Amino acid sequence: MGTKPLHQKIIDVYERHEDERTGLHVQVKDNKAVTDANMNDNPSPRRQGMLIHFNCEECTTGPVLKIFQHKGTTYMDFQ
Image 1 (cartoon, one colour):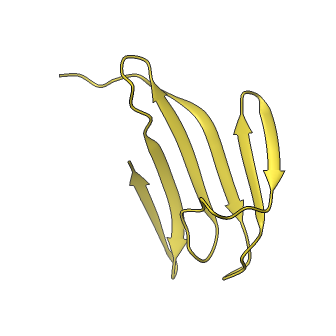
Image 2 (cartoon, one colour):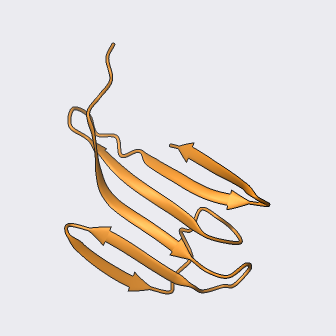
């Protein structure tokens, strides 16, 4: 059982001041960047966050790497 080749497809970056409802959301996809103020998918409930969406060459999974901070600690979660 070996590893499957993954490729980054979409990157979402969320920037906001602590506890603000809106901020800056930048999504890079297909050589284009789109911005808005939507924080709905931000992995951090209070601050900045980042999502890196992958696809697999040999399977149908679409894993996502989540990076965010809380109280001075940086968390990473790969789902």
